[in-house]
Amino acid sequence: MNHLRRHLLKAIGLFAASRAWANDQPSIQRRTDMQPSSVKPRHVLCFLGTDDSLLHPPKAVAKTIADFNFEIDRTYSQGKPDPHMERSFGVCWDRVFPNAWSAADETAVTNHKAVLYVLSPPLEQQKSVAYSAAALRIVEEMIEAGATAVKGESAGVAHGLKRWMQLAGECKAAARTNQGLAVTAAMSRTCRLAFAKRPLGDNSYNESVGFHLVGLPEVYVAKSHGSDRDAAKLIDEIADDMAEHGVDATLRGRKLALSRESQYADDDFKFNPYGIVHVEA
Image 1 (spheres, rainbow, N blue to C red):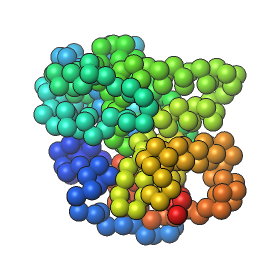
Image 2: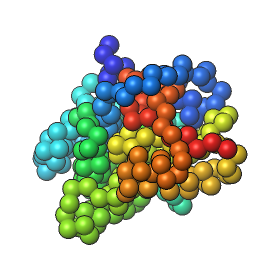
Image 3: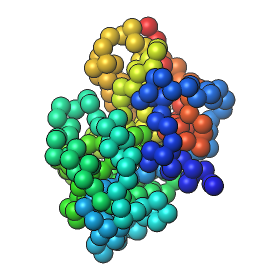
């Protein structure tokens, strides 16, 4: 089984959940290679629906998917319920944004009858925000076409339909505000909030996962800095600075360093080839 298929299986819940969501799972061996990685991240979008028509999006949506060089995965998409979805969405709901999902969203997951996976092409770092904006556009069109729940598998994050649509709208507004330029700091932030998850705790740090989907390193904040919400705020502040001013300038200004250490294997969807910024005590 090739790496993409094996890790798609992991993403859809057929393997044990990541250490980030289950501290009692065995630790993954850390990658300590300090050289830059050649790995290119990919979006894996998971859509749920009420029947197998989900597997055949309307022509306009299929065209959007193709135009952005995304593809439908026909191997693991299925016209029947996936019994792992309720648990998977349960650990993936965004718990930082207020009311990011509702009871109706949970019911939609419980009652789903079909699952569709859409994959992005491998992302070049300088084009990652543009492709994440494209992923949000696909999410928006799939919801309008009848998808009842959506999850970003590459970082393991889910929002309710209302929140997904809000993020898609904010991304388009950010593009218009900056006179239509393909990438802006505001777009980067919106895409990051859509497709990354934070804070995920281990014994020492509150961590982000998914910043590679907007071309940024992860940010790990030592738990001594305060509560989970304090950590999320600091993670977002540093990520905003990196998106607006550049990674090197942000690290210099904040006296931080970039590490290539990772607990994820380099063929894991969660592996960040751009490294990790540790904010120590």
